[in-house]
Length: 600
Image 1 (cartoon, rainbow, N blue to C red):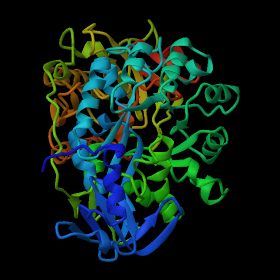
Image 2 (image 1 turned 30 degrees about the vertical axis):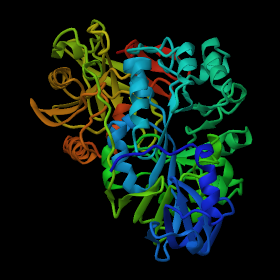
Image 3 (image 1 turned 180 degrees about the vertical axis):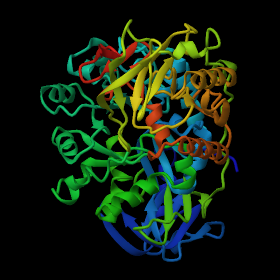
């Protein structure tokens, strides 16, 4: 089935009016459903939806007067007619899929609009990588709006990326047809300190009337937060507690509450609505990061809405937070987010509002999925070799590259250790006493080694440190070229030799995720595009991801979605400790700290 872009409203307004008044038959009528109106927060039985040119012409008790012999009839059979779901903040690359395959995976779950920030590929390929993502997004049968990445690097001076994004890049991208705003402003100290580059990017976005995305990943709600609000970001998804949500909404932001593969931040914040009674129209649901296994096995925005309802949220409020609230925030209330005249005809048919089974998905007026099966083509961009050859290593690494040398004469050392927190993005700043053998610091017990291998410029650089919380046992290592946000290579392991094997494997295959134990590869997820994505079908990538997750469990890790925790260990804009190609970073102060603190 050929994908047709939805016509701009001015081009079809006369046709919509003609259908609504009965002078022109509708192209399609969804007949006999329960209208879920997210504007008035009402459930209205016995309604029809008349659709012309991919847009809603009218919603009336009986559309017989605008039904002709060639009008397609979709029987709702008394089911709820719900607006197509919107994901307000997400990174397609986190699904390990290209935009086409991501769309194919989420369409059956009822997601018809996505607001994506491709800052992962921006760190690897710069503006040209963003353009590729943007162009493939516009080819899809659903609405994929692109936010121009704002922070590559995410924290200047703390990391080195493959490419940098400049204010000039932002100004150029704001003229592209699918750019909806500026991606999350992760350099929150830069905004709070009035960094000229950050303010120039924000100004370039506001000059064209587009939305500035936020990312304030600090628990400090004092003057630094006040400065960030004054800097212009309009939303934030980094809240983890009720106080965070309240502070953001009181400050004029939209609070985005996320449920991704590993981020469970809805339950802890939704009490601002359910218990404190704040206006729910200023709250939005999103996923942020979902890997392919979650998309195939558990769902997408339908999963988030169900979770919000399970946390005590009224179903209609939960649906508002995944539809009209998002559309309004991005200035698209007249285009998407509700079942009302003039909007794109994006509709879900479901038999239950609480469990939200997605039975039929209609996008731009045609059926795109039924009973979990995608029925439309999701075209692929022709990704060039430059996007497929991005893992640049100066040489094969050896076990010696992963040695942490102890000071002369030391029997033990106290080390600063990154502490992983299950189901949350922040880490802890821990201290452990570690033994020394033959001049080498030994990972022991719950502490593993972590290394960041430079992969953009083939410098041969390796930074070593320690991490706690994965629970790995035996001689193993896990390596990934998905390493938010700079996307070098992260290697975590208990054995130097296994770490070298894992790193060299990714250099050979052009990127991805691999797990090794006792000299044998247990799992490989090959991600040839920018070392971040595969253009294989989501089901194939999900199957490989499932084997990867099982291999992590086989090596002793019991964390929920531990892969997501692994991939964020270099994210130098979320406290407390992170690793970068320049050293160990204390994100609370944005300073480098020594891996080894004292000797005994």
